[in-house]
Image 1 (cartoon, rainbow, N blue to C red):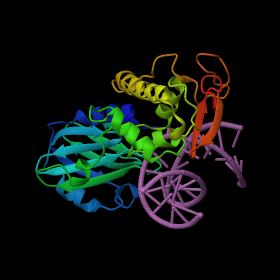
Image 2: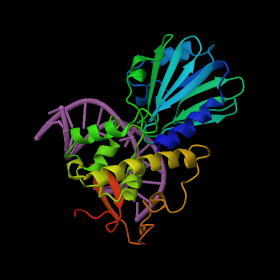
Image 3: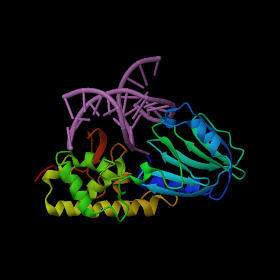
Length: 267
DNA sequence: TACTCTGTTGAATA
DNA sequence: TTATTCAACAGAGT
């Protein structure tokens, strides 16, 4: 699930451990989560350092520790960050657990599509600084969105919105919500958009990002009723406007729900 | 039991 | 260069 707002929620769970010194690190170093890094180094270097701060960039997370240690996390499809008392016993899918005297910070991910990265130095790791501006930042501009759509003129809108280089932070449910509000069919190609539709896409994108962050990231609450979110997955889901049964099909490789009245294919 | 589905993404292929 | 397909993984649902 973790998209922009859920990632932000999880970041705050680990922030509860800010200013606490780690005493022990427990991890399943052989799992896919740690691909590309030496998991053993985490276990050796992190104890003795303290969590200082954290940052999110779209779906990417960065935790800064004292002693110039940096932990990058991606939650993949089923990753979660939680916090537990210090006596916590890691279970099968608790692949990385950081213990301070007061608590355990847990990275749990059954499907292991998530990822842990590690860096050392006085500055944030280079891969972090190279990330594109996430959709909720002021650096993400309408001009940048339009340039990306021009570059991917034949990719269905649904696929474009899921592209993390073009729309960092958007995931499957947000993409459907955005297209529904903009009254755009997920199969529409960017090259077919008239300027009124591009404007609608931009407005809808901003609205859904702001709303998701406001409603979901504080407590993991659902967005307000009236959002497509509540209808997307249930069989017999209805368009919140027309009470029309939603279409449900794979578009650009992902399950997609839309209203055939609001989001007519072509004009 | 067997088979299908899933909120991500990146590698391989076209 | 851009678009599509598929695999990585585990568990839930039918």
